[in-house]
Length: 280
Image 1 (cartoon, helix red, strand yellow):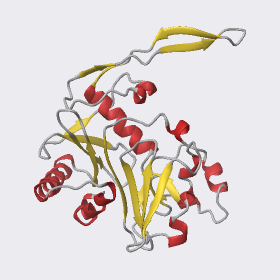
Image 2 (spheres, helix red, strand yellow; image 1 turned 90 degrees about the vertical axis):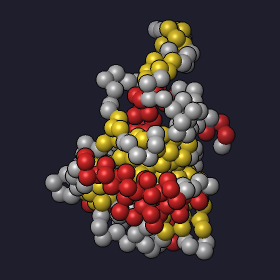
Image 3 (cartoon, one colour; image 1 turned 180 degrees about the vertical axis):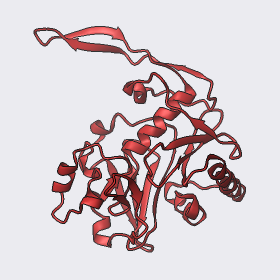
Image 4 (cartoon, helix red, strand yellow; image 1 turned 30 degrees about the horizontal axis):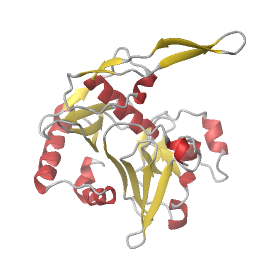
């Protein structure tokens, strides 16, 4: 949720049965405003709260310039007053999202977990057991990894929010006015909130009414399982559509149809749901 309209959008936390007290809201707005000025950021977004055993991490990210994905900075706070930047670890592995132990709430705490043995195939394609995978990391590094994965895999926005400029920058479209009620129900009208990973030609060919400036971004329906990675619900009274990620429980995206109201937030424990395919 962008700092500019944060107070207006905090009411959407109720769709996840979450809320912030008046004191927390005031601290959040003030501290993020200070953070934006001190870090000279073009925009600051409140992401949510990662719940730990002993303390919770408040999460945010900022953009140094108009390109919303260029040199994006991740931040955390333990008291809603002081914010600390999360730096990318020198050595990290993609299997970190398989770590299922709870966050403690101590950035200096060292995490170690046994993920079981790794396997390779011999010349007869018979599985061969290799060494056991035991990742070791500081909780601060794991926090960077989890936030990055959540933003990459579970943060989505309606088609038209992201605009690809001719010079290659990805910016927020200031003229976005929402998508219709019928379009809001269909996941292919939403894009991942990230730099395009897929080939632009493939993304453009997925739509008959494609626009190069809007549709080079990755559509949501590329996730596995297709059309079942998000639970879509609708608030009939306000025409608000809520997309809850089933891969990252606690990640919620919302959009009020025919308006420029949209956003996402995360209130969870930082663990990915690897059992989704077995629950469908």
